[in-house]
Image 1: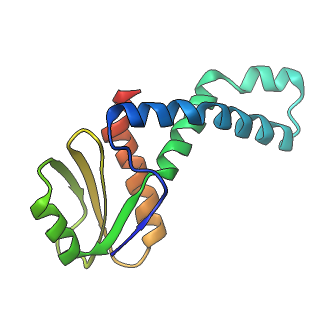
Image 2: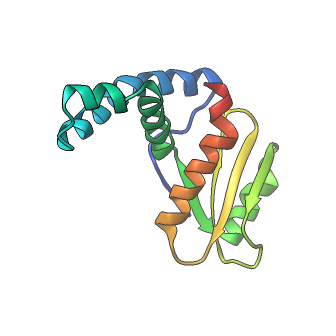
Length: 136
């Protein structure tokens, strides 16, 4: 088993603080992308909305979440000790699992066979949508 990612919120307040801290970076990323796409002032004002920056913030937060990657057996061992609710996606016959437990006694998990990077990215989006979105 190993982990990928850099951030695992210990509390709801911790998650909110981290989410707020990402705001300026998300705005900078969006601005630089617009510059790279040669947006003039008019196009920038028209296309770069608060929703665009919020989407960048959401994606950045999710992309930093710590995700555990392991075998079915490692996941089942963790699951037996975890007291919260877990939403699992995939099939129980698949050999590998990715999972993330949030600060609210909720976790998400997904099975995968070969494409670890894709599984991690998908799980992070699921974690954001199921665990974090309503906190912000």
